[in-house]
Amino acid sequence: MEGVRPGGGPPAGGPGSGSGSASGSFPSLFPPGLHGIYGECRRLYPDQPNPLQVTAILKYWLGGPDPLDYVSMYRNLGNPALNVPEHWHYVSFGLSDLYGDNRVHEFTGTDGPSGFGFELTFRLKRETGESAPPTWPAELMQGLARYVFQSENTFCSGDHVSWHSPLDNSESRIQHMLLTEDPQMQPVQTPFGVVTFLQIVGVCTEELHAAQQWNGQGILELLRTVPVAGGPWLITDMRRGETIFEIDPHLQQERVDKGIETDGSNLSGVSAKCAWDDLSRPPEDDEDSRSICIGTQPRRLSGKDTEQIRETLRRGLEINSKPVLPPINAQRQNGLNHDRAPSRKDSLESESSAAIIPHELIRTRQLESVHLKFNQESGALIPLCLRGRLLHGRHFTYKSITGDTAITFVSTGVEGAFATEEHPYAAHGPWLQILLTEEFVERMLEDLEDLNSPEEFKLPKEYSWPEKKLKVSILPDAVFDNPLH
View 1: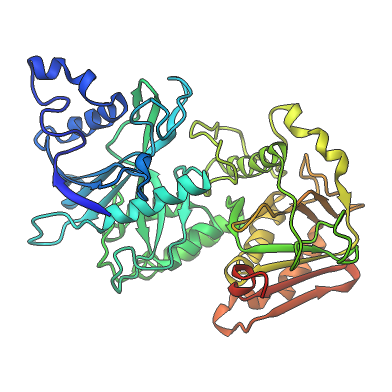
View 2 (view 1 turned 45 degrees about the vertical axis):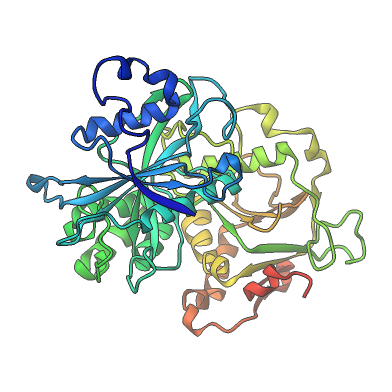
């Protein structure tokens, strides 16, 4: 549970509140990490030293459910010259290391990221006559923070979040989120590392799908050009009733469709409800089977396996210099190098040769026949995987949200893959790689065309290519939620 009280970050009399003994004693009174973020807020809002604040009643480090200690809420007057409307500005405290004493985040030094390396912000258009900020954005931010803490996945600018529900629990069409750099808040150097500020941007379902098919940064740029859909500061208006494609139909064809054709998709992986079976071996062969069908216990990914999958996604994110999704592993840092020139062929390689060829790879098995299983939402992304990734010489990874299973599709020529044209199905523990030739990808796209029309879809649905010894099933969520039934 949370409470709302006045007091931005630290209580009144915090940093920047004046000179004298109180100011001089501040460092010993308030945590330095919190001090640093609060100082950046005071730079932007010197006239609001004590904004309204949502605070976790029972702190996360004391066993409470909410990872964010505070969410401060400021009134921003906007910028009429730039057509930026007045809005409420929300800032989180807790994804970064506020305390430096290992109560929440492990202290790793001053040079790297502080905690997860970022805090969340959100800009909500102020309604006429609204005298106080709504508090629902604070709970939204807590929900995203819980995801980060539980999954240990971090966010980067251009990432998207499929929420599938109006952000304010109304009837709004704004049901998903993109993330971008906050247009006003600058990175902060604290004694516990660097903190950047990622702003949540509410979007419609059609805009989310466009971001998935193309890239998040491209859609963010389009939103910036449409004042009612965000404008230059990407302010969320929950009353917006039209998508950017309904406001300007030319955006879809002239910008998005052309971008998909030219660039492909930079969505290199998703967390998903997925599974795979090795049909090459009998189901009772528990000792060596990689099957994760009912009744079997999948082997856990080793640390080196996880590192290589992390690099798989990292390389995919870099290929267009525009990241979309967080990787599987917790250890991705916000300071990635996104300056590598794009090339048609992607790579699964790590920059460290030790990470490329872990000793466990000697146990990699070539499989004769495999059965892939996805829920409907994950299955709907298969055409994106094939058209937007593999036909552009890249790879795409599904990572199970219910276990250690991972499925990576690779195209011919992707470096570092352990699946080859001679042995297109290969498994390393619970990580399956599938190599698909361009010719087979084109055929699959034809056979999977009905995945683009989910409203006409009836589950379960099965696709089979016997000569390739490949089967794909689209199954109800319940199969993955209740594997014993």
